[in-house]
Image (tube, rainbow, N blue to C red; front, side):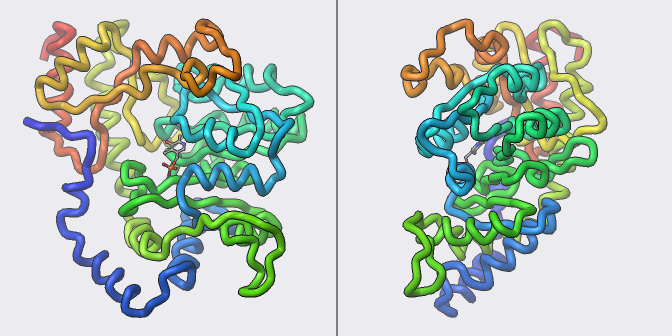
Length: 369
Ligand SMILES: *Cc1c(COP(=O)(O)O)cnc(C)c1O
């Protein structure tokens, strides 16, 4: 049996309904912005629970342009966590601001106590990541942000449909960035991203920021970027948006099967604590295990494409050398880099495949089947 991490061949077995929409677009000639992008933005904002959404070129751009629109730049610092995809740090760095890393907690999201300790007079924003699909502790972050009068820009690239209590990921910060990369829970046929906000002023500004600062064809309010969400990709995203709820629910179902099946394997297998008040959307199913590399090799040999996210944390990457972090500065993040493994966990897995993964993991640790 092969248990793939990628589900694209299964998801797009029949691409015809989407291709029909693209055909319509191509023959209409309306290939940048326009009604197709606007309709997707409106539907996306409604789904997340914000008044506005702005389509951009990628999730990375969504984060970078959000910070730029808030005036973040040289001389500033932005606080984020060291265990995230490189794009979070890249988005901060490309504004000219300094990336300030803090450690994570046992749910793989930013440790809020350390956020407060990292705030300096130069701090311009806090960028929590809903990493793996686990909501960051937004209620606590809101309090910290309020106390220090700082904006939260959510990296919600892996947080679509996630929530914590009555706070929805992407609708809590001043701005939030989403990614539609082919391996994100809402995935288009290439790159794309979305910014969400409740602020009409920021919405109006972002429309200009993503499109040359162009007020109209002949008037430019300021010099800016071209990072428009591709119109063809907006058609793909809009077509798939209604699927997000069942996609999330199926991912949660698979994750719950894993949680239940591994509950008696501690301390060799440790799944993160789960809180029933949090909607974790399982972009990744990540857990901590002993003899990690051996387990990975065993699963691979059995045809299961498990992965490591990531073997080397950001603060110890060559790219972070100028920031001066030493090994030992983010103890939990560093421990996670040696212990985490991500199992296939997506909406196109069959129950038989999930059971096969469970059997292989239990066998590896010599547990009963
Ligand atoms: C994917 C991802 C991004 C970047 O999104 P792109 O669309 O690939 O640019 C940023 N942050 C996190 C946590 C991500 O997983």
